[in-house]
Image 1 (cartoon, rainbow, N blue to C red):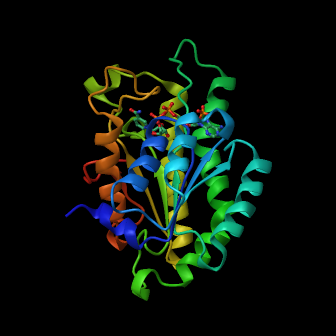
Image 2: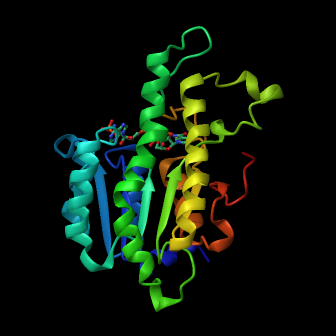
Length: 263
Ligand code: NAP
């Protein structure tokens, strides 16, 4: 059975970058497919222009749209306060750091500015967001999860980082290394993978699961039209994997199929 059914016993899920692409699809699937969590907090840097998200929220009253520009500390802190008011004593169960950019540049065209821009959005922002939401995640974790089982998972508290196979140092070798020579993106996702491991070490005593997942190559604005997976297909697998996470997956780097990926 798909692990996604476990979202039914998850009080709240927050998704960053929910205006389009995978973030929007995650919100859509969580709201529409019969395994909905209590509250879906869909964040976007510009709610006014996020038409599709607004339409979804009109259909599903448990979707809450909040403003969050992931590279603005002020925006992160304001959003954390708003989420605190929304979830109250229950805390936040599942944080999905999905927002990301690909500042394309190879060895010849890469600049310090391009590196820093990509690094900020893809690696620094998920860390700063997790820090800001930590009191809410801890509050949820301290309740012990659905049925107070005390085990790790989305029913209790989890930080999910949307990473990429292209962040794997080991896989960037041999024949594969000739494709996607994107310095800023690849290096930012390698850094995000280390953020995931550092957080996993530090948040384990609080019972907060941390992991990174590769969604596959998906037909979004970022993935392009040649990608083999539709957003629906990718999200169906991603939610199944996330929903089924337990202690054994803490600190892991998983493919959307659920297999371990090499760091
Ligand atoms: P996408 O279609 O380009 O969408 C990116 C999302 O991130 C948009 O909602 C965008 O919001 C948001 N975003 C970017 N910068 C932001 C900021 N400063 N503050 C708030 N939101 C921001 O990309 P996607 O394909 O859905 O990718 C989602 C995640 O999956 C990314 O982390 C990406 O690296 C990862 N991933 C994707 C693929 C793939 O094949 N598509 C493969 C591996 C990993 P705006 O609408 O406001 O710009």
